Amino acid sequence: MIPAAFDYKKANSAEEAIALIAEHGDEAKLLAGGHSLIPMMKLRLAVPSVLVDIAGVDDLSYIDDRDDHIAIGALANHRSLETSDLLISECPVLAHVASKVGDPQVRHRGTLGGSLAHSDPASDLPAVVLALGGSLVAQGPNGEREIAVADFFTGYFESALSEDEMLTEVRIPKAPGSSWNYQKFNRRAQDWAIVGVAAVEVQGATQVSLVNMGSTPLRASGVEAALAGGASAAEAAEAAAEGTEPPTDLNASPEYRSHLARVLTRRALEAGGVS
Amino acid sequence: MEISVTVNGANQSSEVEPRTLLVYYLRDELGLTGTNVGCDTSSCGACTVHVNGESVKSCTMLAVQADGQEVTTIEGLAPSADELHPMQQSFQDNHGLQCGYCTPGMVMAACSLLDENPSPSEAEVREGLEGNLCRCTGYHNIVKAVLACSGQDVS
Image 1 (cartoon, each protein chain N blue to C red):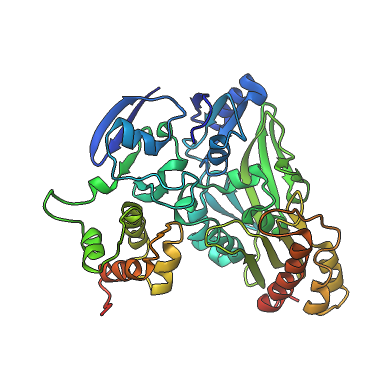
Image 2: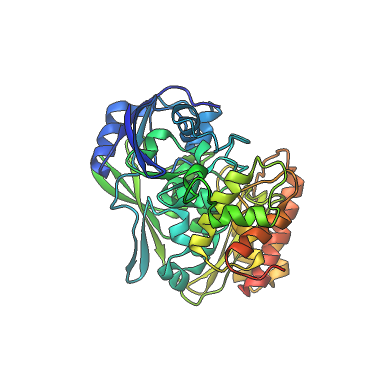
């Protein structure tokens, strides 16, 4: 499978990338690690006429300690998250979930910013970032703006980024020593989750998010409310599928996904000691 | 587009179409057919090569993305024409292959794994090779070969 023909442009800075996407409009796509975009281009599900390669923007791969949060450059790859001492000590759930994405080859290329901007509801990292809270920084022709994670995922493969913006940084609140767990259910190694559940304790409250239970990654608000009201893990997990519209595919029906969401939420809460 | 890539230590300058996948550049332009195309969907790992020392699936990377980078293929591993790389030798010694189709990718993935984790447990080897499929169900001896290459006793 070969992608349709396109023009290739290399950007050496975020400003250059933004100027290029402004010039080419919705015909252009940003290319980072390419591990979501290139497969879609090979299947001709994505047919951009211009690719703007931002992998060479070398100042966007950082993972920095910023007092109350960790700032991660959009081009930090999954392998660097997985092995970051800072994340392992201050936000271990993010390092762990990064280690569950795809396989080692994918993690050497795929980037956090790419995964979030792609906004695939079946991906691991968007859901865990949603559970953690924090914000994302978008840079456009008129400068930077900060978008709360809760407002970022707007639809199926759609985010709050506008056409002329580039995601440059992810800001994750620190959560050292807090409880967390991630449950990913799939049948084959390296696959997307059929359903996944992230549970993390953030400033004393338990935040739970769901992978592949709707058109975007979702917060399991029914579970969170039940826990806040004093429910046990098993009781709260019963609310995991409330308000969701899980997809149907070869792997699972909506009913089966709802069942999985309840079971995996209970496991995540119990295993993480989060409740 | 003109690209300049260091492949197995030698500089290669080539004119490629931007949509050319790295694996086809290696195979069709450079004649390095040791790298196989298996699933062509980033799943099977048969096309695994190293880019700047790390394993990647060359069916999911454009040749233009390798511009200015260092690529190593299975042909570039062995120190000479009559001596195998220790990982290749270990695959041979431990019968880590049957049909051989997955082998170049397995060896490249295994070398990258040991670079990152020089003395992995058996479970870590199995997880570390999750991006590579062997349809002869030969995983047992592949895992043994990787453990042996890391200097661990597999007898």
